[in-house]
Length: 257
Image 1: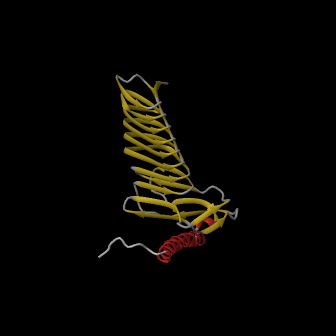
Image 2: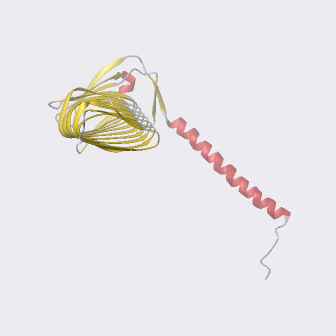
Image 3: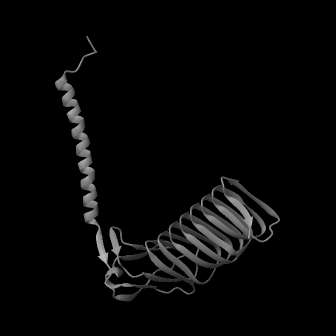
């Protein structure tokens, strides 16, 4: 049997045409999917009428924030959340507690345009972990006292926190900026991207830093400072740590403030 059969011109045309048809169909389906996705989003333009709403929440220790929000954090006896937003925006701000985690987010599929800043006031007896994804800001209105505080930024939001803790962990993924002050025994900070961590007002006994990208870290270490820079980021430190070992891969620098 001859296995090296040659295709006729007509057969080659049919195969080519069939391949083109499949490619065209896939492209059309992709375009149709994008159109449907755009149509399914709800566009909300701010009404200009700002209202205040209080929402009761169960006790929590962890806080997850998604969206463009201005969050104000205070430590104290648990209080209902207080939210300030335009009346037609308030309904798409979702708040829920699962286990020990309070989540504040903008409803999926909503596109907010021309709105006034959304302010959320949060108060809890304990704070252990805060994760902020998106833009906006987080401000600590007083000193947070806790054994361990972890703060993670995903996006471009900014944070200002005063802390008194045994251990503080900070992670910045993106271009967010964090300003820290207070006291801690052990400090660990990681930047992945172009964000900055200003921790020269946070006195730490032991500090470990990792910088991947072009971000800058400012540290106050009294006993030990170690870590690594990969890229063009900088580590600037305050204090006179007895042990100093920050290695560099790239054009980054380690210098004293």
